Image 1 (cartoon, rainbow, N blue to C red):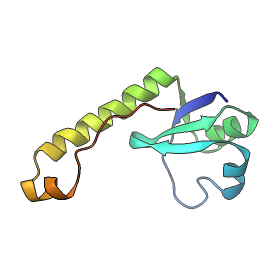
Image 2: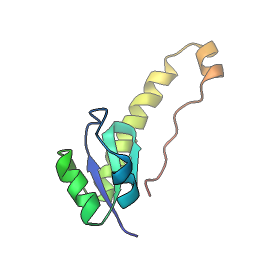
Image 3: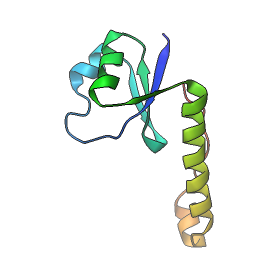
Length: 94
């Protein structure tokens, strides 16, 4: 199945429902990037949450930039913190 990508701010309860999850693939990532199943229900959800559609390359760049920001912040933490929490790592969107 092909995916659609968007940026949308999670507004809490009702942002997505169990019914949404049953009708299309939905997964959230850093920087409010969402990967959505490319069907009528998924596109309707993007519109409902005022999502801004992105191509995969742009969505990946947004996620990468957020992770790089988190890595730079992690680098400033104490050794105790670093021992307890792993350094954020980049990943590839589906």
